[in-house]
Structures are given as structure tokens and as C-alpha cells.
Length: 227
Image: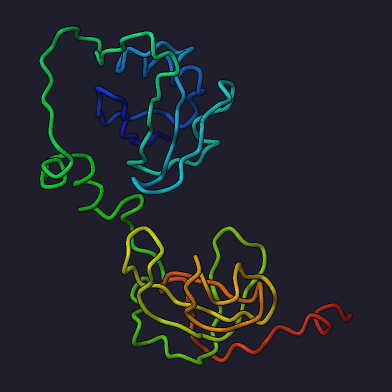
């Protein structure tokens, strides 16, 4: 198994395919041939998307797979030794580089990103429920929230559907849910702006595709505990 990564440094932007079982130490040695940054001076910052929070790959013994990268994730290479003048190079030294701006790159149809998007792979794959639209999420409806990384099910009421001032970009669409249990993150407000009212820790904002509308009654914990 392997994964495509976009290697980014001061002088380099390069798409590379690496085996998931490669150690971070070996990955740094391969990156050295691309960026010219010594392995001891590299800090690798992995982000699943261009705007996502990054994770520092600090353990040379761990494998790349242990950080769960997705295809076309961004791997930023930071030079921790500013006294060195690292220049990007590859196995073929002194070969003129063909460089594109991000806008020009996004317009091309012959890149790995275009291939992955065209074939709906990786982060461009269709997900169950992705056809959910705001019109099918009425305010006040009972719902349950799908959390891929949670071991419990969250249920509640839809309290808000619309654009917000937070998120990856201003104006992004979110669904505000008042949860039955205190399994949320807020009271209906985010960054000082209120979208709906609820008790502390009972509010949560999720993307529309994470919401299932239906007759989902509150979970009775006492009943579940009975034999």
C-alpha cells in the first residue's frame, strides 16, 4: 500500500508516492534528495488538506501509516537550521525545474490531484449521506450525528442550518445541533457569535453530510443498563 504526498519546502513543491510502511527516518532520507535539507534539520508537518491543522512527524521509528495520511496530503518540510542554504534538488542534479503557481496547477488536468479528483479517490471519494442538502434538514427535526471516530451515538435536535463565520472559509455551511446529552463543544455560540441557544456542552456544529434526519428518540441510558 502507498500514498501520494505533496512535498512542500521553501524551494520545492513536488508530488511523491511513498509506501505506507516506510519509517519516518527513511522518509526523511528520501526527502533530503528532494529538498536538500539534512535529515537532522528536518521538521515534517503533515496536514490532510491544505488548510487542515498539521501533525508533526517527530518519531523516526514510527511508520508513515501510523499517521493515517490520505492521498494528496501536504507534507511541509521545515529547515530547523537557518544557517544552511538548502536548495531543492533531485537525483538528477542541476536539471531545470518546471514550476507552476497554485492557481495554474489547479487548472491542469494531467496532475495526480486531477486524476484523484476525476476518479473520486481519497478525499474526493463519495461518502454516504453526501447528497444531504440543507432543505432536507429542517429546523427542529430529530437527528443523529455520524462521527467516524466516536464510540457512541449522538442524538438531538436541529437548531441551526446555514453559513457561519468560522470553518475553513467564511460562509461555509454548517448544521447546529442541540444534543440530548452533554457530548458537545459549546452552547450554540462559536468565537463569540451566537447561532442558537442551548445548555453548555450540548451544542455542536457539523457538516450536512454527517446528519441523519429521522425519528430518533433520546437514548435512555437506564434502559440500556438493565438486564
